[in-house]
Length: 329
Image (cartoon, rainbow, N blue to C red; front, side, top):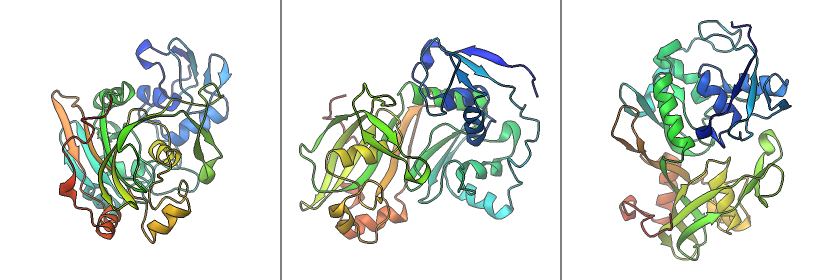
């Protein structure tokens, strides 16, 4: 372990990046839980002050970083050997893989990273590809109950390039969702700042004035793909920012909550949902491949989304190739 406390600047191109992502760009082997502990104990500081892992950094800020364990050192209790069954399960989720990138179709109910009550998660399954330099790295996240496309980088350089594309908003993400009611207009753009309230299982995002402490800009494009009468709409959603629960909070804010959502639903959506799980699926992603050219991957519908489609009579072929063609960029 390096015993040196470092103070490092935030580069111009990193303006607006989250603190935890800034840390993991430089030390990809450090887990999300480790970053949380270091921040909570005050060992990581921003311009001399305590900071939370989710805080956004400004270009030029100085980050104090305590000694970080080298990757070759074993951090007690951090990671156990993966059993063959879990390794096989992890590999069964792959929908694309080459020498630099892995794309998973994340299932419903599987968290991306661990927490106080979460022992099984994607990050813990990545040992299926090996440890050290062989271990893939997460470059973005999905909510526990959101299904679909999840990107991993093979090696620190590939992960850095992929994460950079997300930070610069160059990744085009298309989500499918079933929502209560039929939005009017049928397509458009939501520009509504969000602020986090509550903690742990009670954490939610609410609309806020951008001047409020802790409020963050949030932008989402939406387009109606199809309707089931006036009761339910199949929507294509594209987030331009990556706030926690952004799509769920934004659809709730415009009066059309996503079906099967226990946090952001209302009486109408609950009645329409019946026994359906969260109807939100990361369908497609398009961005520059770290090795050159374009990476475009689509995730097949999850069993939960298939149940919603069947319930309301939607068919995948109804979707346009680019549902956002007429939406203001």
